[in-house]
Length: 114
Length: 111
Image: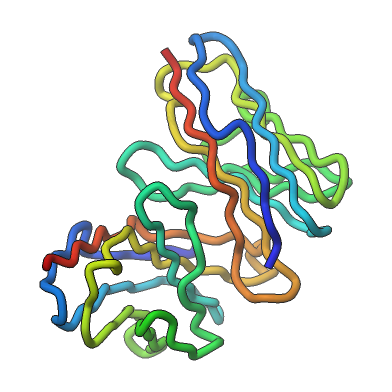
């Protein structure tokens, strides 16, 4: 299965600033997914990132707040912009592997906004 | 729309007892169902996929289309099974391959 390297693993940020999270995959994948896991809650899909096209955002998430880049088939970034304490969450990237079935997840970025 | 429901947020059993984590889904097409597990301080990892019909770590799950359920079962729970379990559904390419998660069930296996 694909191996995902996600960084940073955690960060504490001031409100009003932005943080960019990176996700590197060891194989080429068509679709990458970005999720948010708020404290004590399940995972919610933010957007789907396809190489060569704009990301597709889920209801409640907008590009201005969560801009995504997908420059090639192995890399993507998610930026959390103009952060507020409500953005404190774990952010995860995920890919669907070509070989082994199922989706693989990064280790997550634990973001705390103060 | 696709939705996954895990009715139990917390489940506590004793070691050696059977355990069943419930999962019900709503999807109009043919879904792919998964169980993911997250052990303390570890990343989310795939436990089971319904198409594989496999048994991992003694866990099994059968897709019941009539009841729209995909319950996770293990006949004899072990302490190391304590973790958060998520049921998830994918509608495949027709739904953009997005994975929808249930709210999760925190399983605690007591000695």
